[in-house]
Amino acid sequence: MLSRDPFEKKLNATIIPQDFAPEEKIRIYGELKAEADKVLPEKLYRFRRCNEYSMSAFANDEVWVSKSSLMNDGFDARPYVVMEEIKARIGQLCQPIGEQEFIHHLFLHIGKNADLKKLRKHLEGLSQDELQARLMEIYDYVVNDMIQASLLIPVVAQQTIKIGCFTEELVSPYMWGLYADNEAGFALEYDFRDMPAVEPEYYGKKREAYLCPVLYGQDRYNVPTEYVLYLLEIRLLYQLMGQSEIPNYSNEMQQTLSEILPCPDETVPEKISLHKSELWKQETEWRLFVTGDNDDIDFHTKDAGCCIKKPTALYLGRRVSSFNERILRTLANEKGIPVYKMGLDDHSPSYQLVVEK
Image 1 (cartoon, rainbow, N blue to C red):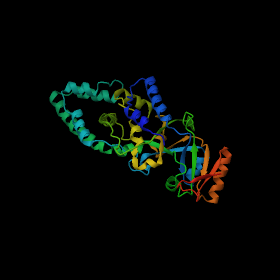
Image 2: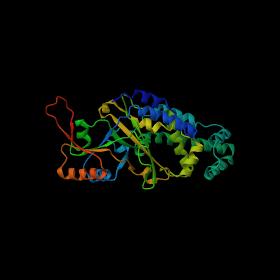
Image 3: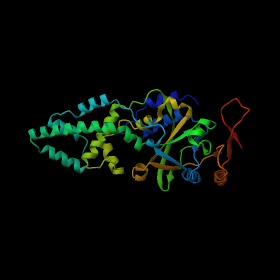
Image 4: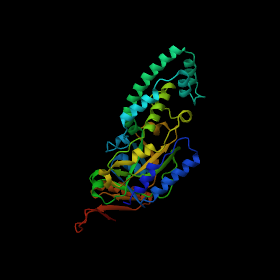
């Protein structure tokens, strides 16, 4: 595995606010991709079990990405936030202020949303005593509500961030034992050097994807306080607009919210997902991030989403059953990709498996 330190340094130093110009975002993301490409190997592998789900996906060239809560590492894409700092900042953010300052601050960027304009009109029509009393109620409610909501951020993040896992390791008995049913499964080889990483559409739905190396270390990624406050304020805006806790992914809603409160750094979900304990370093993992249109509700709300990427080779586990081997070889032959089988070399001092034709 080549050193990923330059990419880690570049990623951690990168901040992309939502209100950056599109051409500036493209430039910065291009620099990140270029740094990742420097350590991208020619081949990456995905280990699978021989079940109906995995074999069907292979037959259809499907690559499924799943929400992080389904991963075998409970810390995957689980944000670390310093709650003492968050609580202090919430108190500062919501402290009572003069009525005119409050109205100006809360509704500074509001112009299009009818519900919010009604709320502003209501507040402006109160007397000073009524307004101060109302502000105190709002303050107490918002502070307590935001503190409770901040405790749920790690859980919510794992329910929303979807990733697909790949590895540089093909001949590792550890990988075959853990992810391919004790060597009774199979592995698919992929070449991600040609971009885009996946086919641009999945049954008429737009799919975009990009690949990044996992960054191993001793400490979890500390999510910036400003980003946590952004999430809490977005949630508050949903409540003010009369929305449920489940976000409305319509383009119109996303546009309205981005105008009122732009995200301070769009790379935070990737930073959360790519930092992982060094105890997993032997997996030399890469992660595929897949995005869908805002209106693609199924992709955003279901446990898993799909994109299309044809594998370049099939590797059979050493203990694969003869029945499954026949099916897998037939599928590979239909795709015109080579088939290999893993084996042991009793005359080698290495613990690595060997690739047989």
